[in-house]
Length: 119
Image 1 (cartoon, helix red, strand yellow):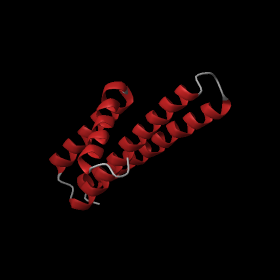
Image 2: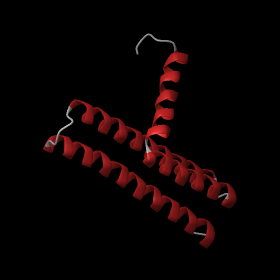
Image 3: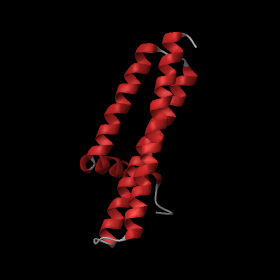
């Protein structure tokens, strides 16, 4: 991709987002949850710092979900059969999404507590 115009590289990235949306139920589910978080932030107006932290958590979860899906796709293509190394790699990538999602949930709960309870 080096040397290609920015507009073309941006097109590739947007195609990847569209493919994730079309092909991955987990990505659509995570995007829906992210949308709910954005609505909650808009309603509660928790302050710029909280909004920034929530936005970063959303970006991390969605990015890891896409990396996980890409890794699964390439591993399934390269090694369609059962293999311990492939299973471990896929499980670890899924675990990374789980860790990020749990962290995002904690951030959301802390934000709610800070706004509602005045912490």
